[in-house]
Amino acid sequence: MIYKLFRPLIFKIDPEEAHALTLKILAFSSRIPLFLRFLKKIFQTPRSKPIRAFGLTFPNALGLAAGYDKNGIAVQGLAALGFGHIEVGTITPLPQLGNPKKRIFRLPGEKAIINRMGFPNLGAEKILNNLEKIKNRSEFILGINIGKNKDTPNEDAHKDYTSLISHFNHLADYFAINISSPNTLGLRELQGKAHLNTLLTAIIDHRDNFEKRVPLLVKLSPDLTELELSDALDILIKLKMDGIIATNTTIDKSSLISANKNETGGSSGMPLTKKNTEMVRKIDQYTKGVIPIIAVGGVMSAKDAQEKLDAGAKLVQVYTGLIYSGPSLVKNILSNLN
Ligand SMILES: Cc1cc2nc3c(=O)[nH]c(=O)nc-3n(C[C@H](O)[C@H](O)[C@H](O)COP(=O)(O)O)c2cc1C
Picture 1 (tube, protein in one colour):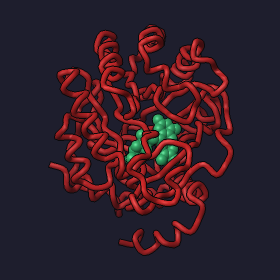
Picture 2 (cartoon, rainbow, N blue to C red; picture 1 turned 45 degrees about the horizontal axis):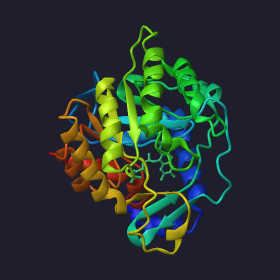
Picture 3 (cartoon, rainbow, N blue to C red; picture 1 turned 90 degrees about the vertical axis):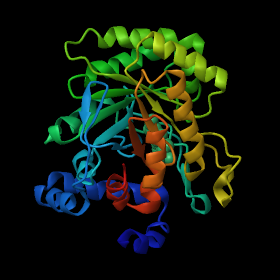
């Protein structure tokens, strides 16, 4: 309600600046216990059902998708909004600036966003430092979304992913292997048969060196063809991957109507809702439910979230819905799931 009142004002600010401001407020709240208690009081829902997946117990079914807190500066503030899990990142080994600004665009007519961020982040060392400061880790699940630096050729991509696992293994509850962002040239080729098996085998072997076994989830693109998807799923089944995150943003702009529709990048939000739910259903049917799925793509309401759970997802995540509905969306979804 309050967010609805302020939204026209917020939408007057450049999307990336509005986002940075929100994160700063949440980062500040993360450091002040009184503020955290206040946020929890307002946003947390008493009706939360824990979910078991990937050998972990999630406090509830809803998480924050990757890209919102790329540098892990506001994790506790975000958890206080009621999310059962927070996925930080995408983190790359070395810091990088990402694509030139302006690189986030609102499409209010269809409640969508186009972004071409290109993994701007502080790099593994600094983000590790940020995450080591987090307190009350038992209250939520922390996912670490990892990617390769822009300049790393695909043939060497495994080195970036394994070095990130070395950095974060002691802190991560799960790793999300991001090979599906459309904004890093060539990244999505890693989903193809030629790379996927080799890449994931190297990552699994590396993970298995650690005493603490962290589940590995693969984040897929909604733009894979039927054949590409089944080829990828065959590999994920063969390698006994722990989980799938479906999906990243789409480069399919055919249903977009707003002025910004031709901006380069991946789109998210309402135009992705149905396409994503159908992909989750397909993955669940193809894998016969053996690989648990986190559904992410166009969760704008409790109904959307429920449909994804009914299609076979174990958990759901949200990003763009937050921009259009504000933080009360979390409580709204969690209070209305079956
Ligand atoms: C501005 C923005 C930045 C994003 N950055 C990342 C990222 O760094 N890594 C990633 O895996 N996904 C990233 N995503 C994709 C989201 O995690 C999510 O998969 C996608 O937006 C679909 O969900 P939604 O419709 O709820 O937004 C980003 C999305 C947006 C809108």
